[in-house]
Image 1 (spheres, helix red, strand yellow):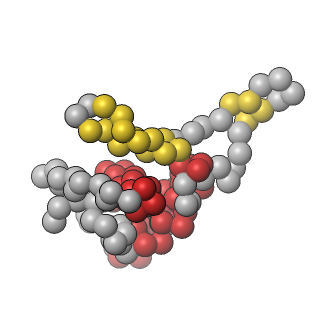
Image 2: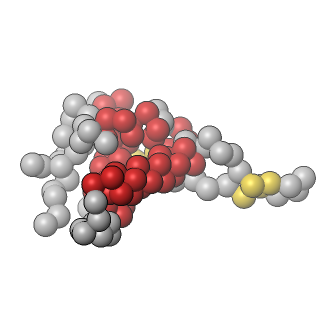
Length: 126
């Protein structure tokens, strides 16, 4: 069952944080849970923990890329960069867009998100 998005906070700063926590929620709810659900049910707990650590390391590495830690691929003439935008729509119209390179840091959010903490302003209705 899909969760329903809450309305964004009215304060610009609170909305920026809410959007970043929302992106973390999407990553954890969709990508992380997808990978966890593919861990074989019949493996022992030690191997399961290794799988979980590998998943979390991969997610963290992706967040490092989203924060620009690894930097672009470049030569003397060209630069190829991976950028990630968090986009807030209202009635199919973009009302706010935040590049994760300009955010507070996806890696900083990771540690709370892994504990199911997605900020003080709820992202989804429970």
